[in-house]
Length: 445
Image (tube, rainbow, N blue to C red; front, side):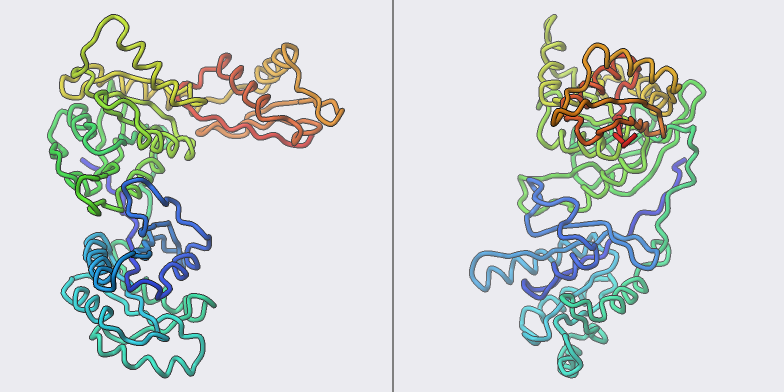
């Protein structure tokens, strides 16, 4: 029985190059950059970000970008981009340019959109004043309803356009919400690259073919959370489609997959990042691990397909050392060697996840923390800066799940990064926070 959670609707901006799609995108998300950009394998002309308007959250996708090549080639690339985008979008915002007027490429895009079953909103950008607004009548010829004038550059009528976008979002997706969270139930996200065996692990843990296990990207695309019982405890396995990166087939990336992984991590307490034993740890694996750390989630690395590795007495130790070297300061993340296929050590994943979850929720008494602080400062006191003596007077835990600690000092800004790292390293030796990112905040006494 999956526990449902409505996914954020996707609003995709399509149109020719230079009509102002990116200007509009940046204005709506209110910052200069998308969350994820320049991921290897993701075409450099596509960005996404989380956006919000009038209380409704959605994913905004900019399919913009510059296509090198001849005019014909640009047209082909744009049309291909539009067709790929329509598949994932809930609403398509078709942007045109009032100054350039109606073009043949606009007409071709309109034909593709008219054939789709997705709601389309026709926007005419660069309408900077009322005089220009009178000239947009030509765009009615596209057959996509009333053209909506706006100026992305100066913000004119952007709000009106977003109101219309929200009207077109299907009702069941209008209010995106998290399920009612039970704080005592572990929410576990199983994430990783395509084909590392995420579905196989879920099937092995649930003991049923809940996900179709195939190598075809997209098979686990629809979100289902699965609740399982393990030694009398409920665990919710949070859906993820993984990062479906298909470099062999150019441009066939599902750009939503990064959002899906991001979403699954965000909704979880602990993320199990699966990596492929036959490939070792890759840059893409590290990106997913860093994403989980950035969200302050518990993290476990599960090395799958361990049954395919030829082993001797040192294999596991050498393999683990190679991963640790790439993790750098994330040495606190535990590593499990598993095989979803032979079910070897798969229940260790659940045991360890429960342990990490418990560590994430623990609260350390203030007296213990300050005893610890005195001891480590006697061993190695903070280096003086600008001839000022730096003193850390007090430490207390201000939050758990995830854990945050506040340290009060006379000159907090003078405490260097290496001393902060020393505090964390000593802290982890004293208190068990396996797999849990910690936040230390240094404040003025």
